[in-house]
Image 1: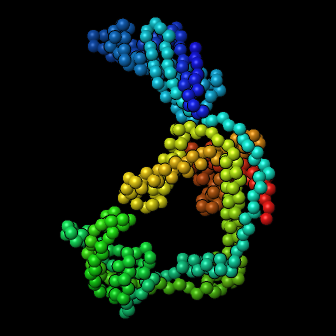
Image 2 (image 1 turned 30 degrees about the vertical axis):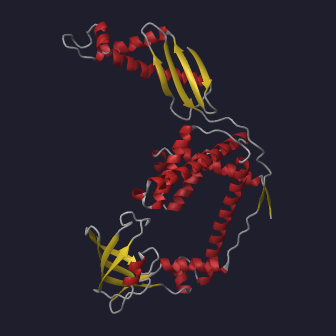
Image 3 (image 1 turned 135 degrees about the vertical axis):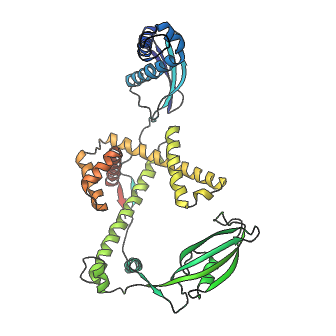
Length: 421
């Protein structure tokens, strides 16, 4: 085969291939024979129709089969010969075929960019000091206390802040008189996430009490269903539950796990908080090192990878807004720009780290992958075999291995950095 390759930009390549006429004819005959054996034509026994009849009736189908068999094979052979690894499936731009002549194809694809690494050892960064204060421990105890809270029914008093209240809610649009569906809603009285007018009205109500009030929503209200509308509300208290938190003492500590007293619980909390802060500090220092390296190297990224990563980041951002169906075009466009910036940064950093791993011959052994799966099983309290089966079934073993490689490379950079106080 004759071929030539053209560099369109740092990542994009154009590959032209001419497949000799004899190779094309040989493949064409194979396909024609297959059609002759399997095609039923009126007036002929199965497999006995003349080839010229088959050829005339199924010209387009035979040509499509020829393209689907000979083209991928030719492209793969040329890519292998040139030691090229596309990051996307090559796109067929031209397919020129006339019987008895060579077949000419033109395809485009993207590859990862070539770039030189700057100095990545002995990068100076300031150590991130961490400490766990008494207030940190108290805040965590308060969080545990709230998690252990119980909500006990009350009947002979009005709603207080922090009560768990179930209300019957009816509402309608004042201008259109259209009523929204009636619903029973559970709320935490006084919570800042509630509608302000709802908090003002529900506090002080008793079971079976009813109230009506009106809310005039601004045009820019985050809930697009009511933005710019005036809505009448009618609420009725169905039940009230009082929040009761346990006292923070030795008994509370024993309820939290295998702790003899409050002191031992506090020691465990301090240990866990310290480990968490140290991990966060390590990530911050690693980010600084990677940013330092990234700022000194510049290269283009394959458009297809940027598009894929942008879409992934955009989905994450939209899901975090919890209102994907109510986003305006301008908001989506703003999120898309932010997602693209994040995608470009992630891809660039990933390629830099992978190149460092290659240069330093950092590898991940099978036993390290197995250890990571054991850790996943332990964290999720599931059998190790179940984790292995799921990862294999979802085809994520290679992803897990790559994540471990990135982690080892980051650790290498931290070990070789100059960290000063």
